[in-house]
Image (cartoon, rainbow, N blue to C red; front, side, top):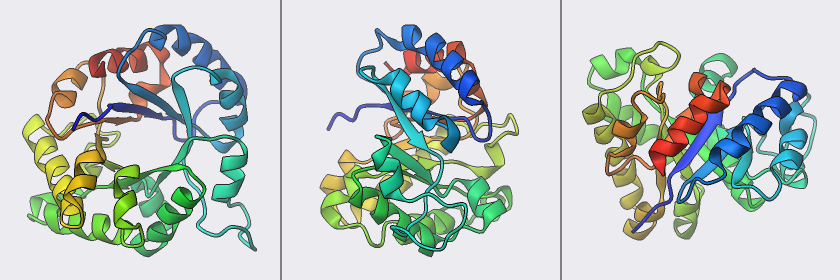
Length: 251
């Protein structure tokens, strides 16, 4: 089965509305002719509306970086799937390692978030990955099995392929380190095999992204891996030329 690559830039806590609008004016001409690749921007809540307006009619999709699992309620500072859908956002990043580490996100909460996103017709990008200690201790597969199986536990089998899973080795985020192609392929293939335990057909539909310091210099090699269907790009996504070069590598 042919899977369309997804290159999603995760801005984290960067870019004001003005900066986001300047960025998109630089990116749109850069990716206008890109064919056979989906492009996403995962932006702060404050910039979502401006980006939706600026990208309307283009190939660029807009994602939030988080959302709450409840439809509404006494959750000060949180945003629901319905609120994002009203903005015409395309999806949301869920369970990024920084959210897990700094804000205590759990696999149980993420299981609720994934189905809430799907229920609002948003595309969830579920992030999974091991720490350096877990990799060195030979526990990479154990960690991924827990995060993938628990994160997808409430998703009906027939919707598994609607989820995007981003494998992000925590030891390669913001460190300048990158998993070797062999390490990235091993982990991405293992993620797919976990989904195949429930549905081989949906596992073939599922897109698995690599999310550990992908940049223009290494993108082509990583994107050529048989089980790597794109990238969740951090630092390299803050410059439109850099992100555009990664999109080119995926096309």
